[in-house]
Length: 157
Image (tube, rainbow, N blue to C red; front, top):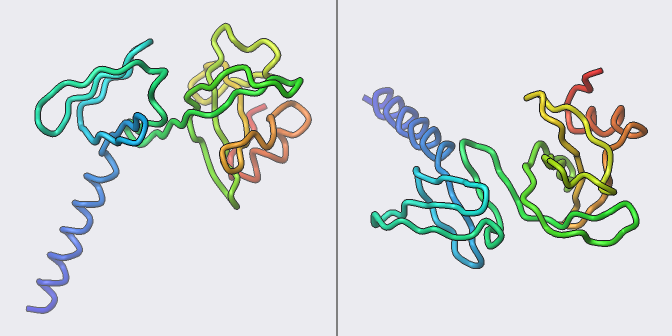
């Protein structure tokens, strides 16, 4: 009987963990919205709330979001000269020892921010290391050979 109870508890825990891993959320200001139905557009985010209402908010107001296990945080983009260009939603790639490695898909806005690499999807991206929400290090040709292995990532070359 004890084995059955323990087995059911393990199965229940595994099911809850699996559902929680797929839960999407969007944080706007001080409010976090959890939903299975979150759509990220070019300029807006659309969230189907728990009570069936649809919330639409500009992407520039979103502080962070998680969709399909990928976390995006709004962080300052800093030019090479040290000036803050703007803030953007960057994808968290890895973290270790208080440092977080983020990926930024630059599009046409890569001027003066740093060098680009081709990510696993074949898309041009820039990588930055942040500590406590502040830029700690830009990943470039000189440090990629040590930064990626530090975060247990392979350098494609």
